Length: 268
Image (cartoon, rainbow, N blue to C red):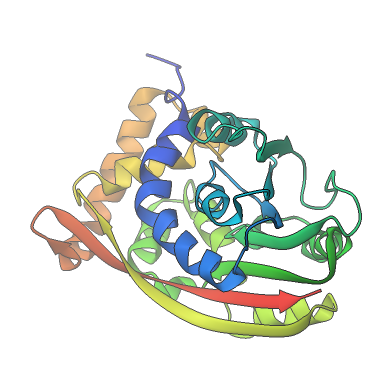
C-alpha cells in the first residue's frame, strides 16, 4: 500500500481552491482596501498569492508588496506562480504574531481568510498596528458561520473528525459582531464590517470533495500522512453522505453554492 502524499498539495490548492473560491473574494477585498500606485502593501497569510497577484497590478509603478505566510509550501508555489515582479514582490515566511517588518512601514495591510487561524489573534492584530503607518488602511475578511455555507456544513458533519476540525476553524470568527469587536479591542479606528454573500461556481460537482481533500492536505498533516487508499476511502465516504446536498446545488455538471463572509476595513 502506497504511503506517498498527494503530489504538491499547495499547488493543488492553488489550482482549485484559489482559482474557484478565493480569487472571486480577493477582488472584493482589494476593492475595499483601495491600494494605490506607489503604496507599500502587506498581504498577510498570503497563501499562494490570491490577493497579491491582483494588488501588484494596482500599486505599479513604484509600489511594493510583501507576502507573509507560515507555510513554506504555500510561499514556494506563490513564488513560482507570481515571482517577484522585478523586485516589486517579496515573499517571507513568518508568523502573524512576529512580522519581520519595520514599524510604520506599510500603507495597506490585507488579510483574506487568515485571522481566524492565528493562535494569538490579539497578538497578530498588535503586530498589524505596529507595521501599518498611522492612518494606514487595513482590510480583512473571515467566513460567516457554517450555517451560511451549506456545502461546507454538510462536509463538516460527514468528515468524521478528519476534515471537521479544519472546517470548524475556518469559521471560528463567523458570529455576527466578532470581527468588529476584535478589531476595536485592538484599537483600530473607523472599523466597518459588512456581511457579503457570493455564489461560487466549481466546474465539477462530482469532483468537489476530492479537490477539497487534496487541497486541505496543504494544511493538514493528518491528510498528508494518509495513504492513497485511505484518502480515496475518505473521499468516497464523504461524497456518498453529502450527495443529496451537492445535488441541490448542481446545475448540469457544475456545482454552484453560496458562501458568505464578514469583510472589514479599518484605519490604524
